[in-house]
Image (tube, rainbow, N blue to C red; front, side, top):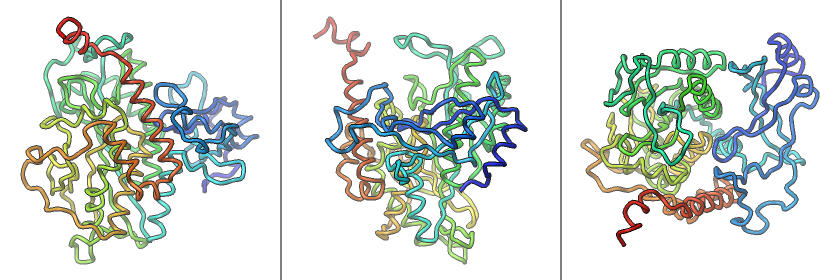
Length: 451
C-alpha cells in the first residue's frame, strides 16, 4: 500500500506546481505505456483505464492474436483498471512544463491483479518468498553504449564524438579520462537520477568503446525494477538532449563486448539477517540451494534474461559475457558469481541477463529459479576456480532454443503463471518470425552472387 493518501497527493502536486501526470505501466518489453493526464483529472479519477491488449503487443508493434491459443485473451479486449502506486511518484526532470510520473498496477474490473502484467508477475513471486518468511534483496548493474545518432538502420553504429572532438577507437575499461569525454551528459544523468530518486551507487567506463556501467544500491526487488524501468528511459532522454543515442541492445556492435544487466541477489529473514549465512557466518543450505536452482532451471528461464534474437550474440566466449551456468567465488568468467563479502552481505551475482531485458521479468525469473532450488533442496556443482570460458557452452544457443525450453517447463509455468507463459511465448514466436523474414546484409554479401 502507498504511504501517501489522497490529500497528501493533492498537496504534493500543488507544491511542485505539477500540470501534467504521466501515468505508466511497463509492457512485456519493459517499455512505458500509458497516458498523459492533467493533474486535476488524475486526482479526480484515481487511476486510468487501459486495454489488456497492451500486454500482447510485441516489440515490433504487432499484436500477437494470430499466435495465441483460443481463450487465452478475451476477444472483447476489456479495459483493465490501472491504479497508481503513489510510492513511485516522481518528478520528470526533462519536462517543458512541471510534470510527474507514476507507475500503475493493473487489475481486472472485478478487482483481481492482472496476471500477465510484468510487475504483477514479480509481485506474485515475491509473495511466495514472503510465505517462507523471506524477503529478496537485489542490486542491479547495467551497461549501455553511447553511439552517434543513427537514423538509417542499414548503417552500423559508431561511437559518438566526445568533448575532445574525437571518438573512441580503443577499449578503455575504468578509464577516468574516457568518462570525462562525456562529462556534460554524465552530469545530467546524476541530476536526473537524483530528482527521480534513482539510487545510483557508482559509474564506470566499461570494456567497449563509449560503453558505460552504472551500479545501483541494493533494495526491494520491485522497487529496484521500478528504478531500472525508469532509468532506461532517463538515459535515452539525457542522450537525446546531447544529440547522441544511448542503446541497451545486448550486442549493438559486431566487434565490441555486449551490454549486461547483472543482478546481485540475497534473501533476508524476517529478523533482517541474511538467509544465505548461518549464525556462525558460514554458508547456509539455502545459499547453496539457491545456486542449485539457478543452475538447474537457468536454461529454462534464459528467454527472460535474453529476450531477443540479438541477445544471443552477446554469449560469446572470451567477450566478457558468460557462456554457461558454472558458479565460483569472485570469478568473473562464470555465469553465477559469488562476490567477496562478509556473511551479512553474502550474495549471488547472476551475470546472464543482458541490458535489453524487462527488469521485472528478469529478476522474477531468477528468483523463481532460486525458489525452486530451495523447494527441491537442490545442490550446486563444484565451484569453478579456473576459466569457465574453457568449459562447454551450456546456455540456449538461440531465442528459438530458449523458447522451447521455457514451453517444456511445467514447474516454471506453474509459478510464473500459465497464461503469462503462453502469451510471452507467443510474443517471442511472433518476434522471431518477423526477424526471420528480413534478408540481412550478410546474405546479400555472401550468397547473392556466390551460390
